[in-house]
Length: 100
Ligand code: FES
Image 1 (cartoon, rainbow, N blue to C red):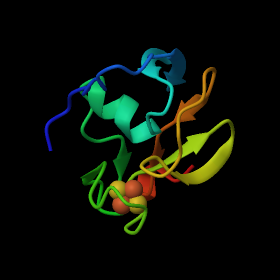
Image 2 (cartoon, rainbow, N blue to C red):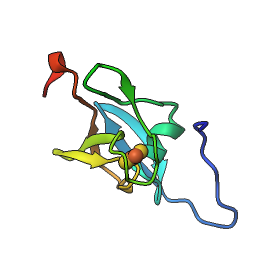
Image 3 (tube, rainbow, N blue to C red):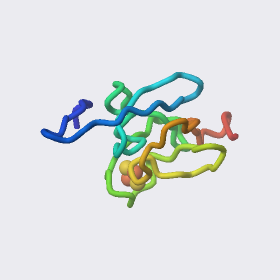
C-alpha cells in the first residue's frame, strides 16, 4: 500500500486537523485516522509485543494492528474510525519496556 491521498472528483473537500503525539496533521473529512496517517507518510505507529512496527495490515477492522489512543480512549482501530477535526491521537506500544 502506498501512502497517498486520492481526491474524489466533484466532491467538496472539508479539511480537518488532528494531532498525533503532539504533531499536527491535516486530513479531509471522511478519511479514517489511518488514512490521515498514511497520507502524511507514516506507515507504522504502534509497536507489537516484540517491539516490531505495526500500522495498517488488514485495513478493514479485523486484525487490530492499527490501534491508537483517540481523545484518551485506548485501543481504537485507526482504520475503522473516521478522523474528526480536533482529535488528539496517541500512538501505543505493547513492547514490555514501553507498557503504558
Ligand atoms: S488494520 Fe487491521 S484492524 Fe486496522
